[in-house]
View 1 (cartoon, rainbow, N blue to C red):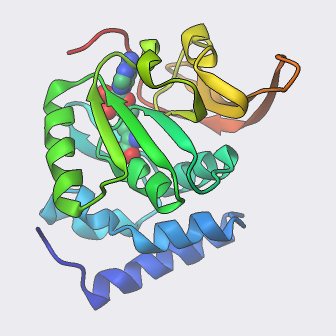
View 2: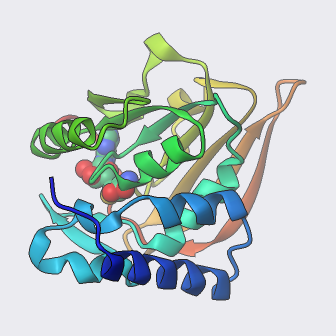
Length: 215
Ligand code: SAH
């Protein structure tokens, strides 16, 4: 396992300052970003890129989300300690670690077996025991572990997957970007105590596509 260093810690602190300037006010989210060594999620040759506010390729045609996007999605979830959270799109595992630092019990699902295997081992080596990884199609969610207090989709969907809404606990949020390959709107759906679904839009983003089936 590679190390953290004063230089990288300094860059990470600078990233947190950048996110504050971009309008992130959620101190718990900022503390989680200050803690997780994002450079370990990229190949060594690119580690200094880890603390720029940009998305970055992680192989298999996928990207680690931009830190600002991670901060916004994490904040929208309003995680409380002990929340059971389903993440769809494990990718590098970075977002899962942020959720874990926020106190969530994380269930994360990835459709690409190469990424799944790599990230499962990596998260284990990092010591994140509150994250459980699954290889599967996120469109189906994880019915055997439902309901979830929060559900986060980190790939761009073309429509709201009803299966995921049906796995939400009362009072829970589903945060999901919905649109097309040109860009998506970030939606937060909330299941109210009276069984209704409330929704709010939270700006424009650009994610890799939410695809069906396992690869
Ligand atoms: N949360 C990730 C970002 C990954 S990018 C991180 O922090 O690095 C989106 C991921 O969603 C990709 O790894 C992609 O393979 C995955 N994905 C796309 N469609 C999916 C599906 N139906 N089920 C599970 N994962 C999916």
